[in-house]
Length: 422
Image 1 (cartoon, rainbow, N blue to C red):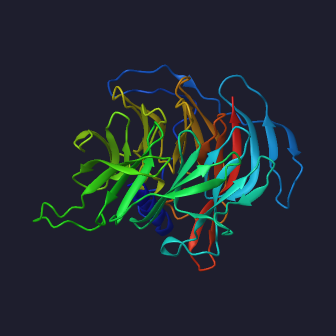
Image 2: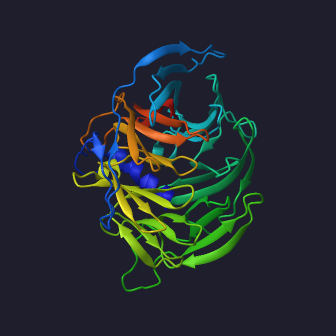
Image 3: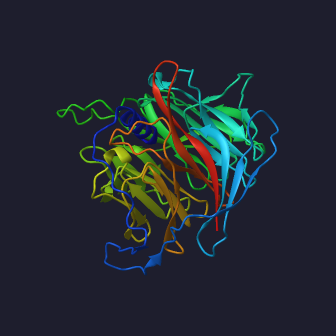
């Protein structure tokens, strides 16, 4: 499931898993989307001219933390970068942002020890003025985190602690007006060895629990040897779980759509993204190793992770209502994120981040970055990656930074930038 996939991905990144070096993005002059049914979409002109900085200012600092530096580009009509803010903080990810530029993020503790000896993440907020404050619960100086994702309404955070596929805990937190976490609820995972959880589009939690570790190869002579997965629907206010169904095998990276369909990654041979009926029977299969479902659950962006790169791969968009498929970029992606109204999606080929606007049928580059301290191993492309969209449409991106923990384990995090788009 998603946590297991993330753990596998990070392990592969650290170990430089095989694959060939990815090609750069497709020719940025024009692009034509061609669906599987040969229906063409009109050409789009893509503006790749560099932004001309006209002002640079430094906001007053309120603490020892340097406040953001703002660079404003010339306001070109249409789809363009308007403003880029250096947030002057290094984050592992952005969990949630508000319209005023305040964020809840996770930072790296390079002196701590997390899963498999890696540097652990902890929650912190950063105000629009640059002030950074670690999040505390029960007087602990830092609140450490596993995999964290905000609810669709941005009022709660779901935190799943997992290591190498083994599930440790699933916790719900209330999110207050200052983007701090309050009122933790521990969800019952009794009897589960592995599992995953996520938000539904209507604000409930769907949870998949298995009594066995999915990495164990089943006995070919024993049809019942595979780990059965039980699905639960969780009330986000009380944490009470209700059994909603049982799948006949373990699915990685599982997402349950509002209409009951499943989306998951199948690693049996070459990685495949599968769309299945509620009971797990396969309806569609696509050659890709990761995906991101739009918030309105009507679109699916698929890509191959950077360490799985090959010259023939693409970043594809699937309409989940019609089944139509279009290519929006060439090369592999490190990650992808959607904006709130499902009209824009940001993706990365590692070095450079692009934003695709579905309504305009246009994509633009929002810049690349030279990685700091990251080795060029020929498999992983380090650079600028998208982290999150804010509710006002601003995109948060990170420029790769690599380091080594006090115990000698490598880790990566990102220098955060906030980008406003026209």
